Image (cartoon, rainbow, N blue to C red):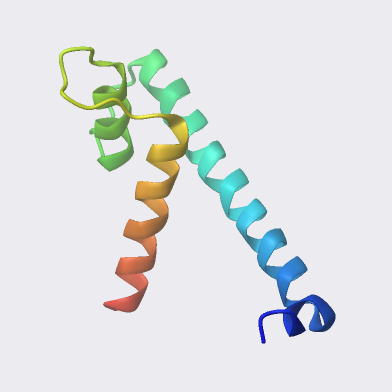
Amino acid sequence: MSWIHKFDGSDKKLDKNFGRMDEFYDKVIDEHICRCSLKTGVEEDFVDVLLRVQKDPSQGISLTRDNIKGILMVGFSFSIINS
């Protein structure tokens, strides 16, 4: 029955919403990268930690930008569900 979503427009709406979320998280990451380069003395948050892990070659894991966006999306979804 998944084919029905092509006719009711759900597929396009879902793609549009995911695209907008992707753009939003890109902006969040870009703002944190700019803020880190300015070294304004702002306290480090979760996005800053993920970016620091991404840059650190001594970490056992490597994070891509898409990995960071995925982690943020899951964390945001989890916080909505539990509120």
